Length: 365
Image (cartoon, rainbow, N blue to C red):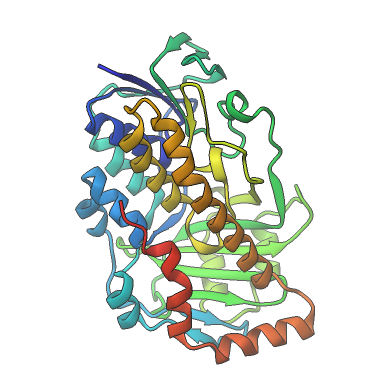
């Protein structure tokens, strides 16, 4: 039986383990965190990701977390609509995206795997192209090593050497909260150099994120977010007031430059380790799920890792570039450019937005 070591127990790593297990591999997942917790935020899963989840056998479970009939779009800071999402047209063309808590998705993936596959509290120190992994519990060897260990991947060094992530110029806060009187309209609000997004979760809670132009590593807790966004339209002040400061995640936003390869020897990269992208298209997790399915499909072939690399690199490069471009547009701060952007949003028909989404969302396994 072929063996695989997956480094990283996040969404991409667990999906890769499930995909490989489904094709008869013996899989071990090494995760440095001592335990998997429910700390986290929401994630959007579009039609391409849902097809990948179908291939993994968990699509129905994930779709069970969806909410029908929500209203969405982009507004200005006073609450005026710049662009409305035609939910019926979106559903007809691509299907309804699912928004759920990352912890829920991880639970679904982990529950589909045999007990004992995931080893927590194991920190990987080095991966080698011959399939050797040096970690805090010793040394392991496998036919395949999957680097799913994120933006600052240790495994990536075996494939590409040291690669420095690129700071996007903005930072983000995320939280999940409850409101006694939840809103019925969702989506994003675009201001000058800042954005705020709201999405509903099936359990009645609300996921929000805030993005602001800032210097890299600039400090800023919940008080700073409240000061920056507290005078924006309702229900943003209430969402900020409902947040627990200890549960708000704060992360600078990065992506990776295009790597020359995702594979070397017996090692393959996926997810953020291969193509970390800004979150503006909601495709980071979606692309990791695609990676997992494609890697498992090719991994057993003699030239399988080369085929995986050739299939995934051009697509993820395109999406990384488009996501960065959208972020630049959303984070404009000069008043004349913001006015021009907002006017363009008002004048752009939703049909044009659907066409622009097709190259990303029409992916099939």
